[in-house]
Each structure stands twice: as structure tokens, then as C-alpha cells.
Amino acid sequence: MGMSVTIAAATEDDAERILKLQYLCYQGEAELYGDYSLDPLTQTLDELRAELGAGCVLVARLGEEVVGSVRGTVDPEGTATLNGLIVHPRLRRHGLGGRLLAAVEERLAADGSARRFRLAVGRRSELTLRLCRKRGYEAVGTEVVSKALTVVTLEKSAEVGELAAAG
Image (cartoon, rainbow, N blue to C red):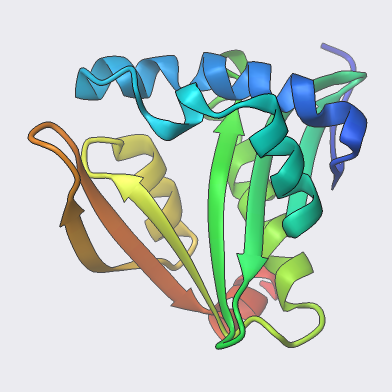
């Protein structure tokens, strides 16, 4: 392609691009689970804009195109909840998801408020589960959301994230 992918903080101008990419990326998940009412597919632009102001939202850009994104917030107890990890289908399996996770972990841990990272992944989402395990996440629980959807909650300590980023 001739250009490299850069990762930076999302801006208000990115909201619509993130929403469109999110809709594209979650089509496969919806098909996998037989459920087109998944939250990422029904989220409104106003809801996404609110998330931009409530935490850390990163985008991956290829030139001017938003080709990936991830979000995270830290609660008062030091748990950083990560969500919205998306990578354009044509760029998957090239390490961009791992780069986005590493970048959001680094940003959320930078001020010392994040003591652990947590995310939730559908049980059938094998590529995402594999990525999370590779980055040091371990399953800590499951929740049956519907007959077709069981969500696995994964966590790792922020110290492990710092070691992985340094190594």
C-alpha cells in the first residue's frame, strides 16, 4: 500500500468514521452469533460521541482512512475496561489489533491509575480470544447473554501490560 498505519487519539471528526467501521466490522460477529442487534450495530452516533469524551479512544489511520479503533476507561478501583476493538477486515491478521491493544493499555497505565485491564469477548470469536491470550489476558469469567451468545471476560494486570510493551 505504500503507507504505514499510525495510531493516535480519536477526535470528534472521527466519530462518524469509527461508527461506520464498527458497523462493517461487527457484521461477521452478528452472523457468527445469529444476532444483528449486538450493541455495536445499534449504537448511535450521539452515543459514540459521548464515549469520545468519556475515556481514551484511539484510531488507527492508513493515510486519512480510519482502519481501526479501540476504547478504554478506568474506574475508581483501577480497572481499565477496554472495548470497541475493531480492525478493517482487509487489514486483519497483520498485527494491527495487537498494536491497538498495546497503545490503549500504555495510555491508560501511563498515569498509574490503571491496575488491571479487562475486556469481554464472545466465546466464538476465536481470533480475538487468541489475540487477547497472546497479549497476556486470562479468562476470569463467563456470562450467558442469550442462547447463542456467551461472553468471556478476560483480565491481566497493568504490570504485565508494561512488561509486554517493554519486551
